[in-house]
Image 1: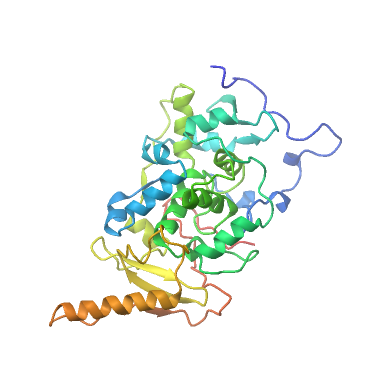
Image 2: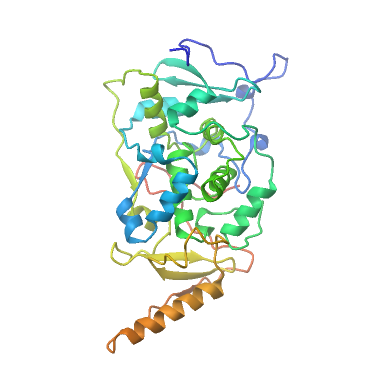
Length: 372
């Protein structure tokens, strides 16, 4: 048991000076690491833990997204983590996440947290081993507006050029990539918003799309857990508990399992509200406010193996017109082709339509207001 120490006082993150500690001062936004969206303020965090989400394989299969999703998971090195669907617990998750600290020392980075009443400190590499995430890439704080992440954001959103304005996960165009981003937010990152996109999503997406890991994914998880935001760290807490071979509190309450199923994806505006498992209609958003409703599966149009990782409106329209032509001529009694064009008339060419209330679909989660 040399990977952690009980009773160890959490290390100070600042030098001993006359300056007030960070904990004793008012919260400032200078510690923001997000590229597109700012961090949460503490008053926006209601502290109620949500169960980490599991993929819904039936939904992915019916939508023709399963192979692409598994490809993204595999390239990011998250297959073992994804397959872990162990039980999650309310107090274990809440205490673990709310006490979590990340100390990125140059040679010996550590994480510190509590398992119920026990203070624990682990080396970052041991934390990664518990999650089965490879400890490779730089663990340094992501710089403001890094070129590689901004270029990726523009590619997956079909050239949305904003950097400071709010960007949404739903702006991502290819459905498998968008689904993976929601999975990151509600399972991997531990404390993340389910609407806005951030540098954490984009750093994971680089790994998932290219197989390269310029950023230390374990450090990204640790940084996100040590920030504010809604709690989705149930699987992480349960894996750490098992890795340390510590007992579960018998009075703890199991969290209700959650899946990114068709109901969840409706709440995220991923599919139309009248979609069913036999008729999955994807909502694809463009920068000028136009939206296309596309019947899934569309494996050729939306493959993650073909760059760029977004599609122009003209390409989508042409593909759907071709499909409509074939559908009408396959049967003499064919119904008129599906009306796939939807336009938000209030949107300008530089602004995405606001999706309204938060897309969080968990019953015990409050609605998160717009970013300031």
